[in-house]
Length: 80
Image: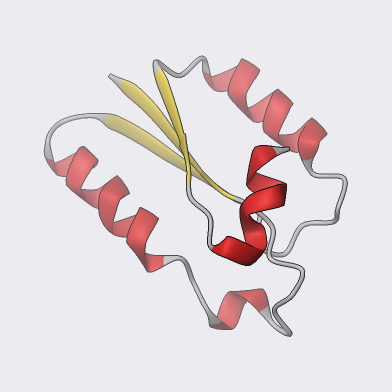
């Protein structure tokens, strides 16, 4: 099964790469270990106009399932 996982932008972080989203990365590895084809789209340090990147990534990869992670401050961006 092809599964895509998305990490939304975190504009509130001073340096987004210092605080990686380990939870969804653990999920990705568990899915890979179970034999699934998993890709992760990391948008932590992307500009506010990230929707086009997401749309292109989803349409290019043709996933069976797509999951999105978010903390409370990121929730509004995850919904977008």
